[in-house]
Every structure is written in structure tokens, then in C-alpha cells.
Image (cartoon, rainbow, N blue to C red; front, top):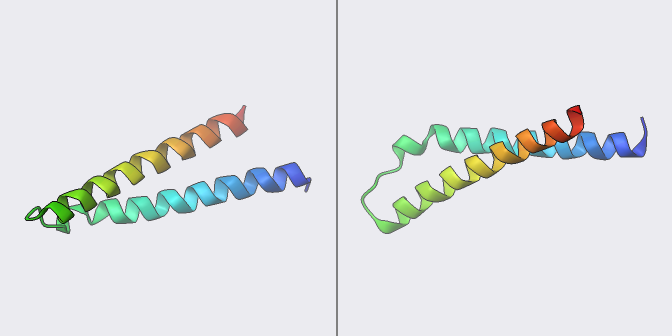
Length: 66
């Protein structure tokens, strides 16, 4: 395997792992109470991380599948 292929594979693996963690956190979003500012902020952080991780994963697959 060439060095560039290893870097590409590594980037995709990291993106998949990040997305899996974001999905796990997103799955428990409904269990976070909305009773204080910290909870609301945490929900927003989880939602934002999910969107960023999904966008990164899609961008990498689009880039490397061409």
C-alpha cells in the first residue's frame, strides 16, 4: 500500500470514528433535559458536532471516490 493510500485510509477512518461518536451522542439527545442554559448549550454542541462530522465524512468520500 502506498503512503498516500495509507493517509487517505487514515483520514477516512478518523472521520468514520468521529461520525460514529456523534451519532451515539445524537441518539441520547432526547435524554438531556431542557431545564437550564448548560443543557441547552450541550444539546446545541451535540447537534453541531453531528452536522460537522457528517459533512466531513461526505466530503472525504466525495473526494476519494472520484
